[in-house]
Structures are given as structure tokens and as C-alpha cells.
Amino acid sequence: MPARRVAVVGGGISGLAAAHRLRTLLGDSAEITVLEQRPHLGGVLQTVDLAGAPFDVGAEAFLVRRPEMPALLDEIGLSASLTHPTGATATIRAGGRTVGLPRGTLMGVPGRDAELDGVLSDAGLASVAAEPDRPLSWEPGGDAALGGMLRERFGPEVVDRIADPLLGGVYAGRVDTLGLRATVPALADALDAGASSLTEAASAGMTTSGQRAGTLAAGPARGAAASQPAAPGPVFGAVRGGYRAVIGALVAASSATVRTGAPVRELQRRAAGWRLVLGPVPAHEVLDVDAVVLAVPAPALRRLLEPAVPAGAAAAGRVELASSAVVGLAYRAADVAGMPGTSGCLVAADEPLSVKGVTHASTKWAHLGQDGLVRIRASIGRFGEEASLQIDDAELVARTRADLRVLDGIEAEPVAVHVRRWGGGLPQYGVGHGRLVAALEDAVASQPGLAVAGAMLHGVGVPACVGTARAAAERLVSALAPTG
Image (tube, rainbow, N blue to C red):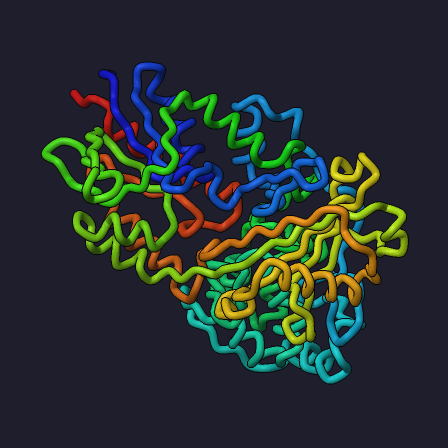
């Protein structure tokens, strides 16, 4: 195959995984250029030094029951850095009490053996018990707003106290705006197969997906896919040294030319290949390539596709984004001796607290507590609640500390604090998201030498992003291969 020139727009995990796969498939002669408009790589994967230890303030973990990340770590020489959570269990704050995360639910949807005592009121428990006997109307292949369907079938407490905090940890969204089919596909599959109630559908979905609410991480793990085959062993994984180790290894393995601070303003179709227009208008430059992978958030994708692929741009323009913030805090162990020995706590939507979840990071991940310090991360902000983030960092930390007094009894001053805001950090998977993505991918596939990847497609978790990246690279290489 002759030497090829490929551009990857976007330096997050999707873009860098695509560049790595392109290098593997195209060989050393290919010219691969990664263009990132921000001054740093990694996208929503960011590792900072919190009191002297690498600490992730974006995505925290990933599902190891999906194959993409273990395979990628093996390819880039980081398999030995893979680690798993301790046996500490998670809790939930609901009804003014902190209790164990309920078992027997599928992403917060109660199955027939759900253990909901302590989370729901007597009235809420009665509503759940009555659901299997109520007639259910479902059109196979259909979709619905998950929150509305759960409220109608189970009542408001299941939504506000269980489903919303669980799914809010994954999508930074509200369950009322999330689509059932995109976020809990195992539930939709069971309904399509004829389940007579949501209770029965959740039970069937748990059998096929192997997921239980009790295994989910507290806080915005962003590594959770909605449905995966059951597998033995740990559910979640992380990398010692943080995600920056993954980003650095991908850059090295891809041998790509990486340009940060390089915004791409335009994507133009050429007779053979594509032209990228970079930089400011008065001093722009062009880059001509054979193929392009677009691994950027939905708004940037819409803008770049609009002239050449208007149907794809229209689809991307329908994806909404949620903003959030992560506050990392470190304490001396003696100052927080009374803190619960749990992995963390999810917070019900109807609780009078600012945080939506707290992870006791050094309890959950043994490597984060080896120096004797206790590290905690708290997440704040959901879709439609951007106003809650329009305060300065000092106030954000003050509100977090006030909530930690309630949840963990922590009064002490932290020895280190880090605030990371994620404006538009996570795409929202609304009703009909699958059809929207299909329209986008079909429109892009009609353009030779063009592919898309990223969190807005087939899952917001890191493994799903890596999967879309590899698929995009493989499609481009197949199209570039000589015929005849």
C-alpha cells in the first residue's frame, strides 16, 4: 500500500486510540497527524497531582468486562498497570438516610428480587410491588423517556432515589431526559421480547447483561456501558498512574505528529481526499490528507460536517451536552478517622445536597491511599442544572465540604484541593438516540475517506470510545486499500 496521509481531529481517548490503530494497520510509512484545539491532550480524561499522587478528575474507571481497554492496555504495554477496586461497597443517600446501594435492579429499574428497604418509603415499596400486575403497553422496537416510564410504572421515588443517581453518575444527566433504549438496552430488549412488566424486563435484562446496581461505582465513573455480557472477575478497572499514562503511551505507540492548540475551522472535500483549514482566519493554514477521523464533541462535529455532509451535521446538532465539575480533596488520615469505610455514596435527586456523588477514592482504589492520605472526589452538576455550576471555585469547594460533613462527618480542612470543570463534557442519550446515530454514521459512510468516533455514538464509557475509534480506523484503512 502506498504511504497514506491521515488526519485525526480530536486528541481525546477516541482520537488517540484511532491514531494508534491507524499506525498498526498502515505501518511506519503513513503520515498520521493528530489535531487538538486545546493546549493539552486527553479530552475528558485528565490526571492531576493531588497531594503528590496521580488523581483522575475526569473519567474515573472503565468496565473491564468489555474487551477494548484490556486489549488496548496490552497493546501499549500497560497491562501491568491495570488495577481493580477493593471490596468496599457503595451506599446511597435517600430519604435523609445513607444506606447500602440496593441490589436487584438493572441500572435502577427494580427486578423481581430487588432489595429496596431503607431506600423507599412504605408507599414507594407498595408501588413497586404492584407494578407486575399492571397492564403494560410496549411497541417492539419503540423507545421512551426512561424517567417518565419509570414514574408512571413505579412512582417518583424509584426515579429520584435510585435510577436518577445511578444513571446521573454515568451521563451527568437526568433520567427524565434519557432514552430507555440507548441507556438501558437490556431492558428494551426484554420488553421487545415480550416481558409483561418492567419488573420482569429488568429481571430478564440482569440475566443477560450481568449488571447489578450494587456493582456500580459511586460517582461519575463514565466507564459504564448500559448492557454487557456477564463475565467472571472484577467489573471495573483503572490504571495506576492515572489516565495520563494511557494518553502518553498512545501518543508514543502511534508515532503520530501531535499538534495541540490547533483548531480545525473547516473540512473541505477535494477531488481525492480532504482539506483541513487550521488556525485563525488571518493566518490560516491548510492540511491536505487522504482520510480524516473526526473524534470531536457533537457541536464541533456539526460545524465541521455542515458544508460537506449536511445530513450528518443535522444529526450531530441534535445531541445535547451536560456540564459537570469534579472536586478532588486530600486529607490526613487522622483527621477523617470517622469516615465510613465504603467506596462512596450516590445522592438521590431529591436530597438537599449539592453533590450528586462522592467517591472515597483511597478506600475504593488501594493505590491511592498508600501514602497514608485519604483522597475523595465529589461530582457536581447534571444536565439542565448549569446554573448550579455558575459559582467560583471557592464556593464550589465550600458546598462540597458542607455536603461531606453531612455524608461523611468530615469537619477537617483538606491538605489539598483540585477543582476541574467539564463544560459540555458528556453527550446526552435521549429518546431515539440510536436512530440519530445511525443517520449520522450512514451520512458519513457515504463520503469516502471520512469516519467519526467518540462518546456521542455507542456509549459514553472509555471502552465504548475506544471501540468506535478502532472501528473508524479500520473502515478508513479498508477504503484506502488498493483494489484490483
